[in-house]
Image (cartoon, rainbow, N blue to C red; front, side, top):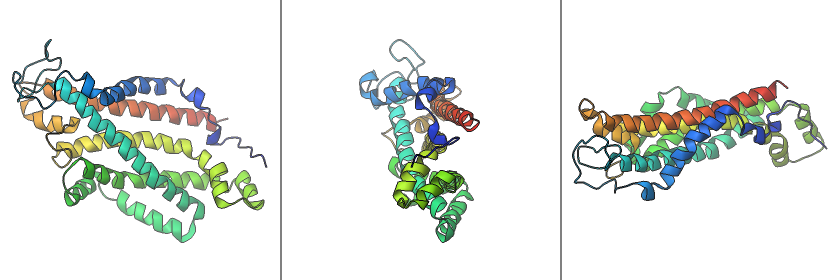
Length: 284
């Protein structure tokens, strides 16, 4: 059987997607940030934990982004903070996808009591303030970067479950899916060939947002002192440690803040580009 999916999301051409202006802008911002995170040990001019420099010095030839109260080089700390934030986005993104997508497909395709059980759990988690849930989980599991990521995966997964489930509901009763069932194709085959390919792009749109939220969430949790712990660094921890010097050394909070904004903006651009491309496909 040849499945003809006229307006399905699976027809999106990835090659055209890469040409979308928003996607290109997002990648132009995101790729340098990722490269900076990966190569931070070689790009950083100093050890981010090295003391002894001038205290609260402004940007100069020796310290391009200045130094903090302890004389540590801010450029080095921002670069190593990028490793934390990029890792948070990647780990939370993979975790949310690995848990949320299968649950959403299961709820949408099987339906019945399975759908009811999964969606009631989703509704309960979504009804609670995400930051309070994340802080409570991080507090119970113990302070640290790893527990912050576990908390973020738990609070963000329900959103992906809901989107995946709704996308599956939109395609499971289409003619090509019903025809595949009628000729006796197995459930894994139907899901793999006709259902999942048509829900990939809605998932990608939300996943980019989830990764942006992960950066913000990790920064917020670290800012409040229950995420990344010294001597490690993150952009949120830099904001927390240096907020008291904002009147005399504003650069200490400006640079980490700008880094967070750029990372989130880049992912939002990519997500918007995918959504726009998805909308154009749906209009055909």
